[in-house]
Image 1 (tube, one colour):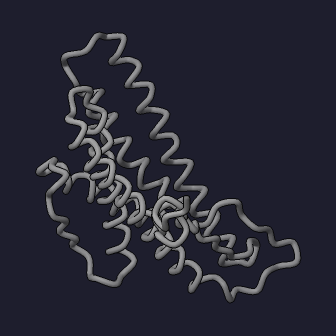
Image 2: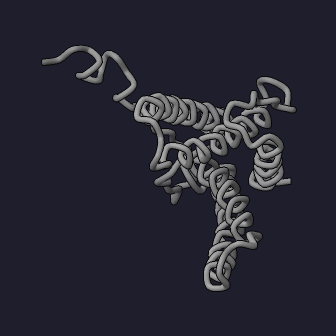
Length: 201
């Protein structure tokens, strides 16, 4: 099984597990052993699917402003948790590939492996929810057809991303690409770097 295939096994499992309650406050019950890459992948998708629903909730035009602010703070924390986890997954790939001798023609990549995995995870969330829209009975034939077409595109993207991630990891293993990881270095959550938080006038 390739790493991308492993992701395609774990990510939809997490999506389905979340929707057993469909509640953003449901505690995660990660079935994989703590400290394994499988545990991280399951957690990654759980964060994504919860945040998907938080983003839905905050767009309620009738939402109480105080509740909206609290929800925005929760989304901010979720984004930071997501970034931290992606960087942890990149550390896994770094340990795996950084000592592979680079071929003379080796190239660098614009995106680290874990950020590609991040996009694959979110794609699984999109597919689940677009399938929900396809299955709705309370929409026009025109809307139904649009959703059918969108779902087909998402599934094509899933095939393409699975292939491209596999090719990327194969290139790292063979030295055809040079393993580099650039950390996000986000500043707005850092009380020492955000002027609003450290009190700059």
